[in-house]
Length: 92
Image (cartoon, rainbow, N blue to C red; front, side):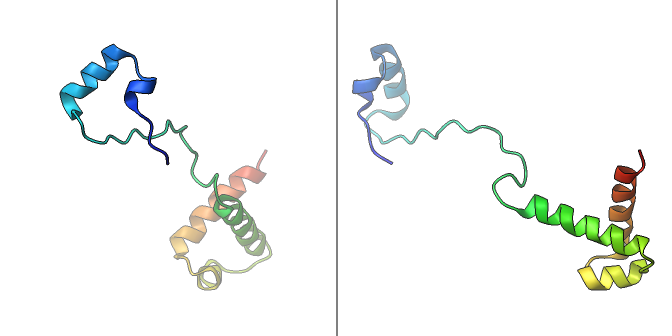
């Protein structure tokens, strides 16, 4: 981050308004950020989708919910929720 003189880049009217609040102090102005969707900067979202698909496959092959819960370190309720969600994707 580099420092820029406000007088060099801001209109005089805006500079005078800012001086009413922060006369002589350093002021950090954050960058504009676009709203980021959860998981877009990492592979977590993709990894969880693959895991959930695998859970559904194993369930359809006959593996009981309690064993899936143990294998994936999730609660039985979480496994049931994943199975419901995955099933709704495949019912078209």
